[in-house]
Length: 489
Image 1 (cartoon, rainbow, N blue to C red):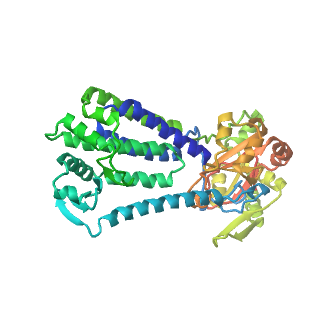
Image 2 (tube, one colour; image 1 turned 30 degrees about the vertical axis):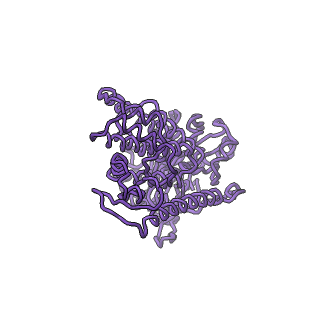
Image 3 (cartoon, rainbow, N blue to C red; image 1 turned 60 degrees about the horizontal axis):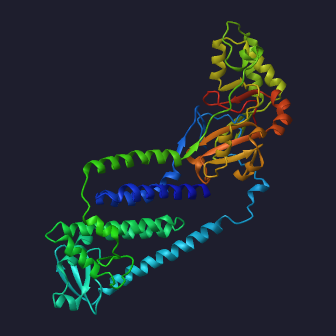
């Protein structure tokens, strides 16, 4: 979460700097309007994007795999996972979200109250159609402002025709261009993203750009620029209005007055728009989460191991029919059937490592036709690679500390990602990454399941794993799964 907040604020800050120093001085007001709105959304969404930097295929784990090899999976998604003492947080996880929800609710209520205030102000008032909008005549010396297609003006000034046509044209431009939608969108976004103070500057920039647009609409008519600027200065000390409305009395600045006389330079506008178009994908790549899904590299295996570890033996040697029958009978003898949580009956083969080694030696001597016969009997048998140590790269190790991307299992125990702060990359002997898919993602909060083995655990279990490398299972469809070298259950 902290990483997301930092990236979101950095992104919104960079885009705001681009606006103030590159775009704001150019008279491309409609482009700037949508740039500011999209920049806020962009800053919120880009840190949530994930770019897979994998160089090899990652094994995908789902609850319903086609291949059912219950003796092979190192961390089946459906299997109950051990929970260690690290899973008990000192501070309840809901407290930060509760605080966030309370603040957002208060801000949303404030917006609701402001909307009700504006809507109630037209209740019982005289309403007069005015082009595509409606004039709401208000008592006293109410300043002129607009909200959606309603323009609120002083009834006294209207009756005496004391409302300058430029003011009405200005507010009508706000109404026609639906600036109230931008304002409401910005306010709601601020209510949910109050943690980003830069959005307050975005709100100010959007409101000022609205004034640029409305001023430009007025000056597109017969109105003289000098006279209009004097009219703006005359209203400088007018009354304050609610934050949700568009008002002719929006604070006058040098920028607003200068924009009225700014000349349009199409060449400069094209160059700056092109720069923005190039900047956005660069920012997206720089700030998006990057996952590194490399599998541990397999080190060189001695020649004596190559024949049995890497590929099935396909020579012409064959075993006798009696040995084939003994092979199948022994597998059948040690097969038991268990009922899964989903009611599926799964065959489980359980035998000693010595028996498995004996069967694998027989399997090696089989011909291709005999091996196909073993497959036809829904039997899978193979030997896993020799376990070798492979420490992760530093950038990969740091990336694993992100809890919204990786779920960590350390030596077979589920631990929080912060536990990795106690280790160095050289402390890790093995790592295996699985991408969760389908129902496997439900309730997880992360996208990858990462299994880590420390050097101490590797050294403690290496002898047992070396003696237990044969995998024998009853399957419905066979394709040797990718598993951690020398690991099985």
